[in-house]
Image 1 (tube, helix red, strand yellow):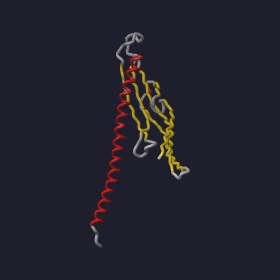
Image 2 (cartoon, helix red, strand yellow):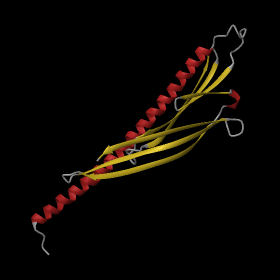
Image 3 (cartoon, helix red, strand yellow):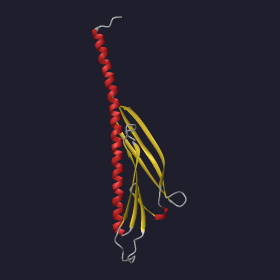
Length: 192
């Protein structure tokens, strides 16, 4: 079986197109994972700085020793689920000892306060019951694709996706800690 020069060139061009398509897909996926990782690192750094700022403000306003923890759950776009996204968690803690003795305390050190901010909601906790935040998540996600045909025969589609979540946060342990519940719903749609 003889292969002509024209057939050989067609085979080489086809092979090059397939290789380029595979390489481009892999490159885009790696780039998406890298961008997601950098966004997560940025969120972690921001949450850490934010918790120190909250602790500094509370310590100044109340003239106390303040420990302030932050916990942030948010949805971020991902390579796997571009519309629904994936959950990322960021946390930080700040501790500030405001060094101005209070006249009310007769020169003694101010008392300690512990605050925790979970998803932009602030809770005050007794300092001896502080400790670990143990979250439990109950998540329901949905994806829906609907197609319609108009009078001229054009097909249109719309993809709707979202998530409903209930979050239960136990702060300070099961026996002597406190439990906080939060809910949220998230929905997006886009035409194809």
